[in-house]
Each structure stands twice: as structure tokens, then as C-alpha cells.
Image (cartoon, rainbow, N blue to C red; front, side):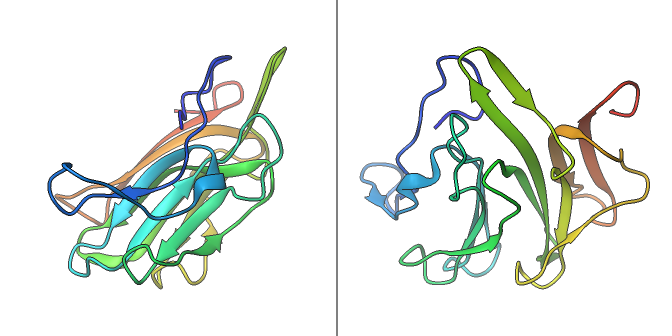
Length: 173
């Protein structure tokens, strides 16, 4: 599904996996997630992956959030859920410590007459234990209503994390 929310945005059918360079594909589920914004693969364990689901932005959607598999996609656990209106728009993993994962959460609802873009539920979340527990980051980031966020852990210096944050007035950047 498309995560660039426009009036004609398409809805996806889940996660697919190829083991032969894209010649054939196997459906791995998450068909109700609507739009998948990001996929992270564990750097040393091919059975572990994370999916950032923006969800069905045309309606409230309990399938929004971050999902994790530990068996190559045979089963999925929702490891981060904020609400039916807030989904994951970006994920980034520390390349030197794959247990450290950042999730950018965005409250977005597309209506035929408007786009609800942002809210106080959104923000940048961090897990230091491979997705078992999450904490909303504060301090140095915009407070209150935030919109879409892009996040990336620097591969050259994993102690540095970049975030592009949409926020009210001059708070974003």
C-alpha cells in the first residue's frame, strides 16, 4: 500500500518474501495492515524482521503499529501499538546493536474532504530490547502535536540519530 497519503492512495495486501532474487514470492500475512511504510531485517538473524504498518488511513485501523517476526514471517506479533489512528511511518535499527530500534509514529487519517495530519500520540519511540518494550522519546524534540517523521541511525556513528519531524509553527525540522 502507499504511504504517501493522497486522495487516490492504494491499499496493500501484506508482506511478501522472495528467496530467489524476486523470481517468486510467498505471502507472509499482515494483509489487513493496509499500508506498510518500512521493513527492517535483522543483520545476522534472517528469521527476525520488523514491519512498520501505517494501516488503513481511510478509517480507524487496529492493524497500525510495529510488528515483529522471529520465525521468518510464519507468525507476527504486534510489538508497538499506539491507537487505531496512529501508525508507524518509519523504522531504523542501530547497525551495531540490532536490539536498538527507533519507530516513527504518525497520526494520520485521510478523508475525502481533508487530511488529518498529526497529533499528540505521534512521535519518536525507542526500544532497546529488540521491540519488547518501547519508550516515547522527549527532550530536544518538538512537543505536542507532531506529524510525519523520518528517522535514521547513522551507519558511520550509531550514537547519532537523525530525525526529520513535521511539527507546528517553527518547531519542526
